[in-house]
Image (cartoon, rainbow, N blue to C red; front, side, top):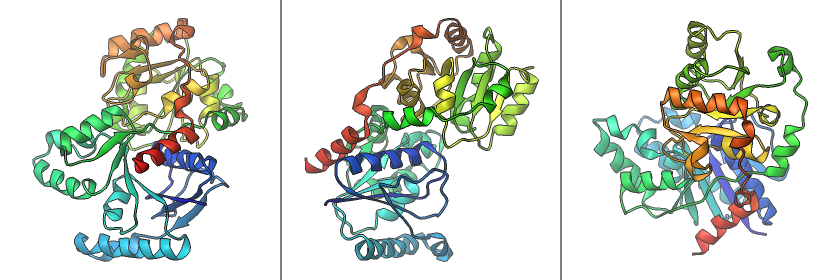
Length: 360
């Protein structure tokens, strides 16, 4: 049996972490022995019984002051652990920069980096006086191994930022439609008690600048507000967003709910789903909503949405008036924003693309 190793810093609640778990399921369906290795024990998702889980704690290595020693030494320990406990993997897939900067020193074969964010935005390269130093550091990591980008927008940005020294392709995130549908059937009656209605618009995402909750709330305030707006997530800007809702007089129209490891019942029963992001890598919540036949309206941000949705479902970034108009239409006629789920996103098909990419 062939073995795949997926490496990520932790499994706290986020899109990348969910993507890693789903990709692992895809490799399991291909017949692989699947292992996930993380460097923090933190986990907020239920573990898939088809996957083997490992933790090597990076925290003690933070005491080594020099990064040129810290990461190579830890990578050596990672390699030893993998070879002793798992054996030599046929494929190693590193996810997110916290893992990539360690795995750059790994000697394990067939290693792929997955680029899940636009590099220029992630490292603020458009407004950073240390751009040249940062780009040099990133090239040292990413030019040595092939890179898989989760959207064409992410790949274009990677190539434009780091140059032709980078070997890359685009493979989208995987989405387990059957699992999403099953999880969506779990009860969640308490939301109806909070809303006092079973009709609402939904946004799912961390409270951070990229998600543009300020635009979302202002657009909602300028819409018909025929139905409540539910915000599902957590993050450093949550309290700031609550204050904005109060300033806009929306306390009775907006419901704030904490992060939920199973957002799918909320998606399934929503009248429509709204995304207001200024930037994305590949926005998971759109295919997830489509898997549940939920209509979607989104900003046409740098990468992701326009690779999934038609122009009718998109508005320009930071355009409050345009988003307000689309939200009003979404409340009146959600059917006009329905889009079929694309089965090319199924886990087994996505995992096979990784295999084919390495073979090529």
